[in-house]
Image 1 (cartoon, rainbow, N blue to C red):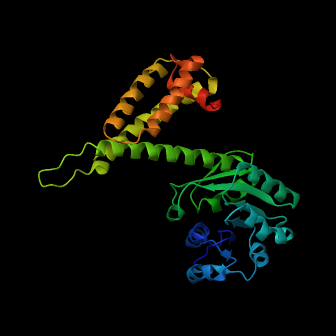
Image 2 (cartoon, rainbow, N blue to C red):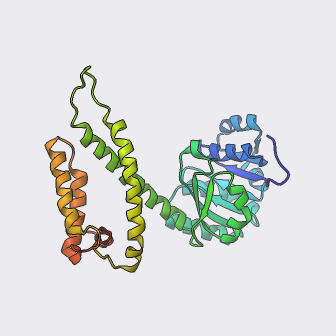
Image 3 (tube, helix red, strand yellow):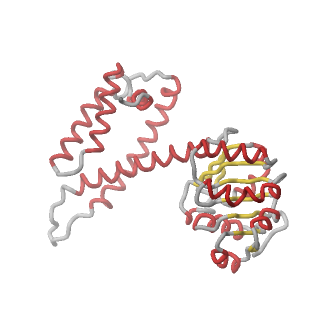
Length: 303
């Protein structure tokens, strides 16, 4: 491991796929990196790259001013760190373990009670994306802890501090995953719809619907991003001027999608869900408002 004098030491606790990726990115960028895992065999590859393998979790957290923990769940966080809370006192902890905002609040309170600086973190990538400056890492909690270690956190990806509320990183993580799943499912539904219109090519090969549809879909998403930026101030203001395309117009349009899918034997559950949300929005008096008013239906779930 080629370390640099200006690179602070870091400890990584938990060496699953993501924890190993975190430690590897720190090693690659010259940080003296101490690692610990309940199963020592997981540390061998990192040791070969230059990481220092601690013999105990107490030794690991004592080796660095900053500890990153990435384990299975919050129960595992406490199982590993509760016995060494005294060793962590006066140091800083970043918890990358996935969980709910309420668990982040609990962990932050635990840390404060033991004199530990605390950040909750969310990693918006899979392990191969760790270390890329394009990858978002979300943090919430003590701003002073974030500022003190920002240069170190930049070794992992682009660090974004969301606010002092320690639950924000977990909340954004859940919301962004929902956006990802919704977008990918919409793309897959569109691909299935386009693919259902296959006709045999002259040589007998079927058209490649996904690779043909995807560049057009990706270009469309640029326009969708524009809609999001237009609608965001409307959502914050609670006013939805229908000067582009109203909810009533969208209800008519989604009917075409339903018909096209049903006629081609493609599942209609997704467009039916969307149509139902739009109809509830219109019934609440927003038929002549912009599509952003659908948030009112989302905020008031159907009985």
